Length: 223
Image (cartoon, rainbow, N blue to C red; front, side):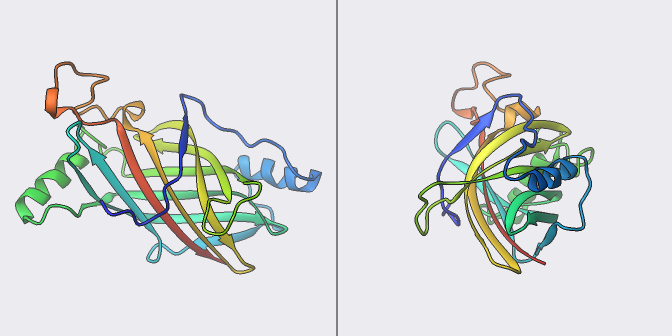
């Protein structure tokens, strides 16, 4: 799959849920703590994600190197800023709108889409949404133009299962607009996505599907 975003690196925090850590001044820490409790203080600027301009692309591969790719629609999203500093956010992904791009035959395309929606993979009827809750934007010291300037930490929920995740991103923020791109992988086996996984099944041979699924995310948000 042709990369649509800049790939850097990802660290998946095994089994750990990330919490907001107080940082910056006392007032900033207070804003962060309120966000963690589900409160949005009046002083916080809310940037609403434009779901039509933003993108979530996915790619999965077999051990042979072959694979499939597609996109998933964003349902909603918000990024929170206080005094010009990003302090949190949440992104909701609409799993009912997962699509396959690499298969042209309509019948084969529909079969794979249906399989991805089934209990073998994402159990979409039961879990129609996935969510990324961002709890920290940590600036990268000495970042140059075109390279990641933030390390983002948060919690990724798929099929009702939540794990912490950390990845690098390129984020450009102005007074009224935020543009962010990131490319990272998550381990599907941690979210009970078992089909073809060597963690759950033996002797799969060339049918083994890698547990790492890559997500390419581009967000465009404005006040």
